[in-house]
Amino acid sequence: MQEKFKEYASLIVRVGANVQKGQTVVVSGSVDNAWFVRLLAEECYEAGAREVVVRWKDDETARMKYLRADPAVFDHIPKWLVEFYNGYAEEKATLIGVMDDDPELLKGVDPDRIQRWGRASGAALKEYVGKQMQNEFAWCGVSIPSPAWAKKVFPDAGEEEAVEKLWDAIFKAVHVGNGDAVDLWLKKVETMARRAQTLTDYAFASLRYKNALGTDLTVGLPDGHKWVSCGEKAKTGFHFVANMPTEEIFTLPKKDAVNGVLRASMPLSLKGNLIEDIVFTLKDGKIIDAKASKGLDILEKELDLDEGARYLGEAALVPHDSPINQMNILFYNTLFDENASCHFAFGKAYPAFLDGTLTEERKKELGANDSFTHIDFMVGTEDLSITGVTKDGREIPVFVNGNFAF
Ligand code: ZN
Ligand code: ZN
Image (tube, rainbow, N blue to C red):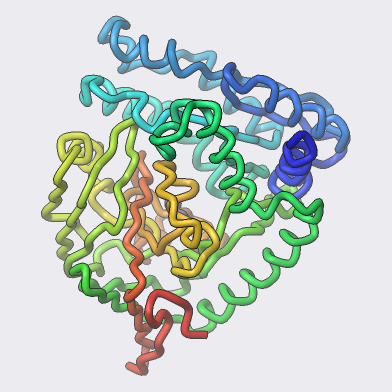
């Protein structure tokens, strides 16, 4: 096992964040998994990092705060926190986020507190998040097991066994175990980039989604949209992989040109709550109706966060035969579940999907959505068909029976 941990840490630092000599690296991770954060820090220094700054998280005191802190706390982000992020962004420090969150950490918390904190931090960290989305610096988000998360995924196993099983699943998902993960990933990045280029070259006017679950949706795409896969290039000049695992090739929908019915194919873990059986009805891009069999109040709060929250900001293609889907495990963690299935996000569109030289105003005109939120939800099924319609009306199969047609 020890070798696999080291292989994973090395993959994150060398390919994911691609830490360069002399760079500052900010690592956020949980106190419960301090050993893994330390392993990462060691790899970063090994790669020549100037300094590794750790921002510790703790699930239990975070939950305590939501339950017991003064209500006014949730409308105000402390200055030091904003300065922390803006300062390191200015330095173009590399960011590594290690997530091991309990998917139901905030169960039973007043949704109003969650919404207000989301709104306040969205506003306070807007500049920072904008820079991250523009790839001003390299960043990489990864996950490791916590007992609470592992027990959620493997409820029938004992705690220790569940954690071990989740480690195994994560290693499978990120191709760690044979000592060749770094090489495998470099090849994978290349293949996915080629596929993304093919999609970009078609310059589709729209995509039509259909399956037996009930999705029947037309998604307009903006003029000049680009399809993006893992392996982006930061403004620092170095490639990085923003999420590990990753199987998605994605772009942005045209804000006001999405119409029809969209049914989620998996539960969504949102802000420490599970939302099940989501059905959205969209008209001229707006989610005019939302249904869910569980967690609808939490979902509605998120959709009402701001004007853009009810519009889509991402359309992502993931083959049904992705290795994560093949494991047939519901991870209750978006980073994994989104790579098992085609998905959309409601909320902010990543500006990198359009020509970087365009002004923000022009991007908005073309149909890029803006919001403080960005929530992925899964829609792929084994019978999903997606047809691309070109500007001159030609119909090109993109997905047939849940997988790429080319
Ligand atoms: Zn995505
Ligand atoms: Zn997303």
